[in-house]
Length: 197
Image (cartoon, rainbow, N blue to C red):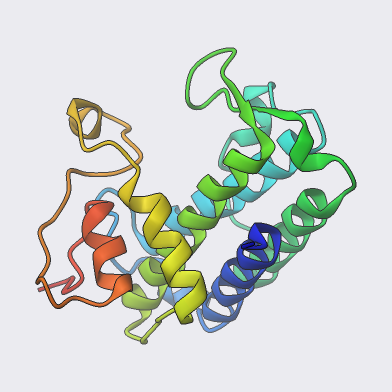
């Protein structure tokens, strides 16, 4: 059986290693998330870690815990702290057995912790790639992590919600039939594996 807590930990730790390579001078770089510069993406990633940590502890219904805030002077260290906090929250006894409040999806929306952990894992495999591409470095998750992430990514509906303002993902981007798992994940979630080309 796949240990999703372990896979999520690996995804987040990969993202921490990639983010550790940026400097404040990199924060204005463009990213595959077209509306965001690297600093905006990092604010989002930190806010999501904080929100998911609060939700894992039963405090996610307050929209303020999900709000992005200005970055600290050392954004990589701030990111590492938020990542450590969310990993600790997901690992707490009983965390995945409770329903998580996710007000960003809709007011009053909840989902089972085990399902929410899958959302988080997919986000951080893809956001690790986003940051890596913005920095001009290569990122490919290991085969097990990529395989699980692909299963979840392929289950995300490619419907009219993807064209709405604030949508989590853009419409599917076709990829080669011979594409590896990571490129298929990216295409399924609306990113071009060849970004910025």
